[in-house]
Image (cartoon, rainbow, N blue to C red; front, side, top):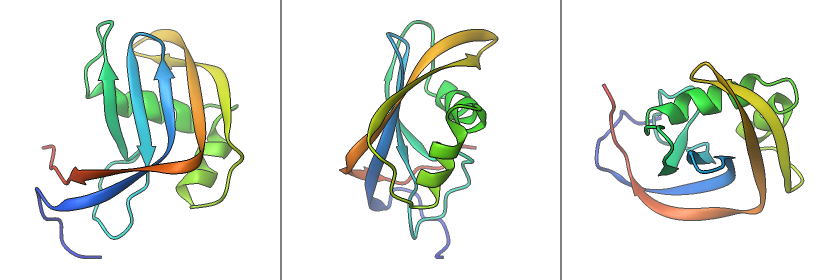
Length: 119
């Protein structure tokens, strides 16, 4: 894998989305060939209801550790095929229980993006 280069143009393939209604929408992606130090790679698509972009990390970590959702998340992270569906579960984020929709897409959604470092 090459060394990280900021502002590099890359294609992002969203394989799923995580939604907490009216608060946050996060696109789930697992970049190939690009250095990514994030435990849960993603693209923050919407924030509201007191959420901030940085909260995407906590939301995805809760999804990846949730008993009902973790196997599906792990399968996607390994590049395995997962049946499209809207999985609904309760997760804890920011000290509150939230209903989350984990939506697995039938086909990835591809977006053009730029790499960015967060220190």
